[in-house]
Image (cartoon, rainbow over all chains, first blue to last red; front, side, top):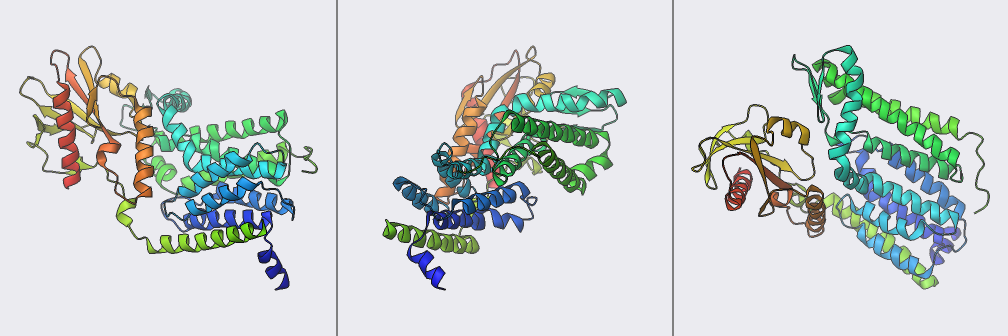
Length: 267
Length: 176
């Protein structure tokens, strides 16, 4: 009780930041667990775990500057609004403020905040900007194996078969969001283990991205192969199977690829 | 500085509590629901006036496409409804309506143009959706939808007619 009174009476930067991130998590991310409209937000949850671990490293030191408190005040006010993307906007502001700081812990918090915001909002904006070019490329990639197996035809972002089978690749079928999710997982992994960015770490990220793209290509192929397969892999349990496989492969890649990498040492 | 920190602590906790209450109350569900371009589900469209045109038939391949009859053209004009947040398959459209035989006119936001800068339209849509969510007001279909008119090459379509037709289609969609 005495520690609680002391903590509230003289709140540390760590306590303020913890409460802010907890507030964003409870208001904008936790409700998604109970939503039937979307799958369980695993990468976002791991991102918040990484934030918690970085906050733990912050200790009782003062790390924030004077205007950081003002930024926290504004961001905390913004997340009151019930629109589910307000958390992402608040995290964007705070992320931009922190991500280039010399203090590695604050920089890590900024990078993780930006990663969460990108997965929620900015990735969708970027995908819209490039999808007209990206979707035909992803479709063509999926068409390659199918062209060897049967007489499928490719037109733009559609693959069709003379007997009526086929698939049209929409933005929601793109591997782009999965790539962002994998990037957030990688960033979280780096921050949890307190690793420095290095050519090797970026190579590991690239390997995970390749795996995700190949898995998504396989999924498009399965969806195009038959109506039953489409039902299973697009509407049915196949969606969960694929998500879990992607998550497991990405985490395994990070674990094996970054094993033995040097940590960043002290902040 | 300690006083400022205490104030911030109180603000964060209070803000979180208010945010939880606001979400639980879901005070204005209508503001979150966005209109959809699903007017083609309607069975009463055939023969309806759409601006200066009349709906001749629905498309067999695309549920967002209508064939329109006009006074100035013998052949039908084809109009496809799209959402600015979803890219249409440009190559599939080009294969179906080749530029050698068909002219194209886009209508969006009360204007008709030969080209459609979709990214700009999308950014404008994002800004309007942001403003609509902040004010808890409904988003208009005209912010979200664009229409692509395909006309036979020998038949010129006036920009005014395309704009009038697009507004009429939005009116039809919102009236259901």
